[in-house]
Length: 197
Ligand SMILES: *[C@@H]1O[C@H](CO)[C@@H](O)[C@H](O)[C@H]1NC(C)=O
Ligand SMILES: *[C@@H]1O[C@H](CO)[C@@H](O)[C@H](O)[C@H]1NC(C)=O
Image (tube, rainbow, N blue to C red; front, side, top):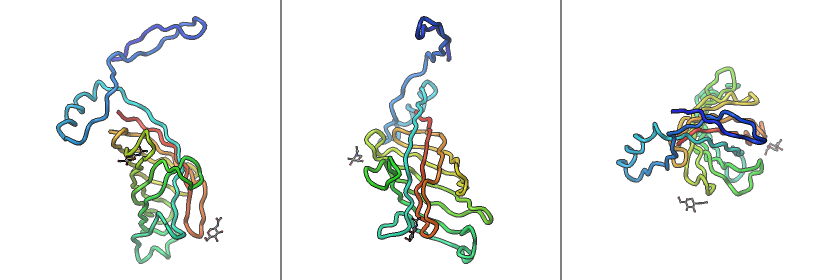
């Protein structure tokens, strides 16, 4: 239940600040025993949601000795299609803090994407971002959405998460930083904002 309180801010000016009286911070659910998840769920209605913002670069590499993206399926028409309609790409792409592929990695994007636009370059993205930086180690965010790849900014929905990001929902914005049209290698800048418990 939200309650209004009077708080002095700065040079004595009074400001109205909304205070949430009953919200509490909930530690993440222990998932080693399913019976512990039930009571955790029951307490959710009193729990405060947290907001996390993440910024990283996604390296989709087809060329070279150690590609992290491979085409695993295609249709008979795929190679004649201007949009490569029907191609399915499996990825285990590194995520880094900066645009260079150098370590340290902040995580990996594991999943697949496929070309789903007959006339427009549109991808269906289905991937889990698996974080390895100390604060979010082993936590995941799941993305399932439409990626109109030639647009400057693409909005992708965060549809869930695990670990630190249990019950996440949010928005990922993707922007191509680098693309080699010959190899398909790409570096994509991601901004993520997620709400979770
Ligand atoms: C992340 O967790 C794994 C085990 O799941 C562990 O081996 C690794 O050292 C951890 N890394 C960091 C940076 O905490
Ligand atoms: C794209 O890749 C090809 C093949 O490796 C290479 O010859 C070319 O220089 C690259 N172009 C850019 C812009 O990096």
